[in-house]
Image (cartoon, rainbow, N blue to C red):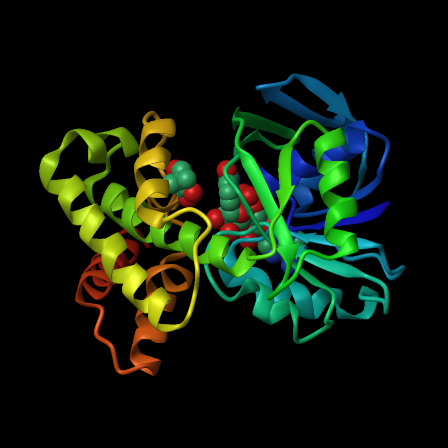
Length: 299
Ligand SMILES: NC(=O)C1=CN([C@@H]2O[C@H](COP(=O)(O)OP(=O)(O)OC[C@H]3O[C@@H](n4cnc5c(N)ncnc54)[C@H](OP(=O)(O)O)[C@@H]3O)[C@@H](O)[C@H]2O)C=CC1
Ligand SMILES: CC(C)(CO)C(=O)C(=O)O
């Protein structure tokens, strides 16, 4: 399958490397330093598995339409990245988002109806240009967005499994995207504000109580929108905290690097959807405000 990874950073490079390893025709589209390192020395994966592959790597989207574009930028870069890719989205091209947050697939739907939603709990971090650490093995769930299973989603899941990813197709990918966003809406800002590992939220009764209330608030908004969950976000919260005890969450990592966070696409979206229905989301608003303040402190 001809696959473009749009936004070859941490998670995109991991998926690209795994798919390249099984012989798929992968092109990574990323920033110059990473692309140069891959072209000079290959793309190295360390951690859960250790190997080097030699996929194509470029800074601009090639003109030929691929079968699949895996969208792996941060959510705030999605709209611009898709605009850069629009000439390469053919009639038969599918776009799959493996990003956190809400709204990325809706951006992709502006360009094609062939959209797959996805969530992944794999952990990846760029160790240095050309080297990605597979920090933790997780699951990946994909499905036609907004609804249905679909033949192409099944084909992609087969490829992912062949590549060594634990993957499955869901007919309710919107439910999964919301469940993950609600879990992120609790863990990420609390961990970022406290500058603590995810495990500390489990250990500290005040933080755990707050995280659970934030999840309840998110669930109220989701339920009002008619979202149904395959796994309840409260269970997903506890399971995620347990499984990622040693992680500094991605929002905290962004804050530490002085980078923009995805708060607008996680808590910000929950606040926005609440407003549309005349519902207040005071906990999400408080966390959003604190993270925004922290973001501006580090700029
Ligand atoms: N890392 C992880 O373990 C996981 C991440 N996710 C989600 O996946 C998404 C990506 O995360 P992550 O990989 O960590 O992020 P990264 O910032 O590591 O990777 C994104 C990369 O895409 C680049 N980029 C952005 N726009 C373009 C463009 N138009 N053309 C080429 N390159 C571009 C970015 O460059 P620049 O920084 O210069 O903009 C960056 O190098 C997020 O939504 C995240 O929440 C989900 C699960 C796990
Ligand atoms: C699962 C979790 C909370 C892991 O830290 C994550 O998605 C993130 O950090 O963004």
